[in-house]
Length: 455
Image 1 (tube, rainbow, N blue to C red):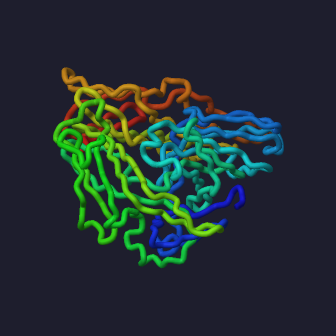
Image 2 (image 1 turned 90 degrees about the vertical axis):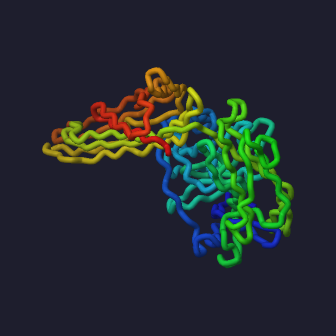
Image 3 (image 1 turned 135 degrees about the vertical axis):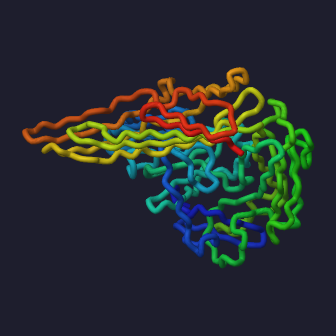
């Protein structure tokens, strides 16, 4: 096998009743989208870039969160170059954690660069080490995986060799879906086993009517919640959903009517089953797995709020021109008693557009990631006396500072220059709103916050 070859990443199944063969080229058949791989949206930035000058003789760079590392051997770069890493939203099917944009975008290397994902114990509580892969998104939006990875489970490092820069992520080949969820007391959710496999096959789409589900009916499987088979009234219960599919098993998890104790929340749902996943390689068929144990984390809450943030400035005077500037973001505050946490953070890319240019100068802009950049919160507290919820973010921590937009201008008489730029804390540093069943709209200058109860 070549050190670096691509396969289409799609929501497909590999069963012992089907024989699939991997190849060294991009496959166009996935049995899930009329024979065509399905692209996803390009991820949006969720944090500032980490940058470092790497010499031609080699070196390394690590992301701010410490989870991604690039190691350059001597001669990989044609000359000294500034390398960047930026966290982005993860839109990869089966993708786990944060995805990353490596730059300069499209940069190719004379020798392979080692890409390392550092992970913690919680990753191995969601899937098994042999099912952990590394994927990248191509220019058409299709996710591809490298066929040769190594996984040091003692040091918790997943490594692969890459030859170019783009967007990259970890991906689980087999997992419970959803792998994590937030439910209010008494709510239910359907769980199933999916396989995000990489294959070149000749099976027509109608042979896999449910396309992405991996647990065949009749196979022995055991589901548990916090180690209790089928769960109980304290941590929630598991029941089979027999009518969802004629071929594959689905289960329903129902949250308890009371919030579990802090040391048992989120609850850990596990699935153990026997099923050979057969892959035919150049040497013939071999069983990749027999007994599989997978996990999902379900957080049980008393209630919560969805918070939508927006920024709008219609008359920004920069670089001898007038610009419009917009940015958005959102998150959920999930509540459990008198404390809470922030989930489902989303940051969109900033949009800066030229409104008018009344001078003889030419103007352009590099937008940066926008003033709204929601980072993990350090505190979400409920104050029943004041009837308010306060969420404090880590945006004042310098490692979370963001880059401001840079406006460029070029005027007659060789009058060229830049305005803007620099870095600083993003918005918000904290947010406070009332405990109520009604939607709240808070306007502060160019920022609007809309808080909606999660029903």
